[in-house]
Image 1 (cartoon, one colour):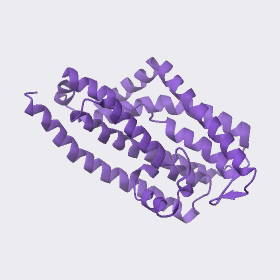
Image 2 (cartoon, helix red, strand yellow; image 1 turned 135 degrees about the vertical axis):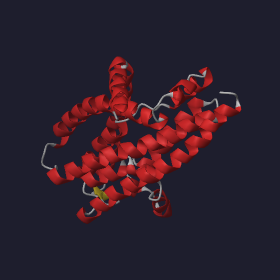
Image 3 (spheres, one colour; image 1 turned 120 degrees about the vertical axis):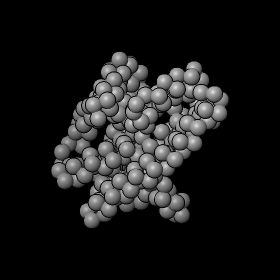
Image 4 (tube, one colour; image 1 turned 90 degrees about the vertical axis):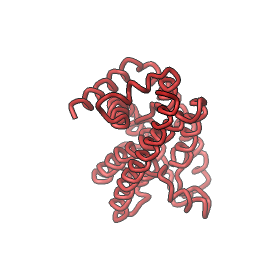
Length: 262
């Protein structure tokens, strides 16, 4: 565990060293949030509720989705592809630690820095717009729990897509495909409750919703109290399933290297 703690520290230092890139990306996402905020505001001028969401709920959702989507935002698909092309990936696989564990704790350290900065920004803007009258202590605690479980699901999704870089040189396409799929199906762009009919039911069976939709739905009271624990268990189940699945895919992907004499 001491070895992984060192990787976590390295991840935190990396995040601090490349804070310019993080701040630029965060501000770009925040501009998107402002656009979403005023788009929804214009819609709720004419509608009291939209698919069960009131304007107060949507205000909370927009800021919470920004927080969920920004934490653990640094994808590692392109860096993995670069190390594969240079052959440096062999050095990672030869280390006396799990490659997946190394990536997880390194990204966890980076996420610590991201969460601290993003949480302060989001909390300040949220309180300026909504105040504290809509906050519930128990719901907020469950939201944070769901947020951290969602980070585990998001890591597994990113790790799975990074393994595709062993099969293709187009890491940029892999990264963008993952970003679009995660953003759209997780509820980062709009609540999944807004999706039409059967499409909404199909999306509910995908792991993406555990990243944004579940934490946000807990916070804005879109889920009944008795369903909150059930959704947290669902997130935990997805972490276990994806962890096993990526382990199997990883072994096959690492085997490709030996085929080329690595």
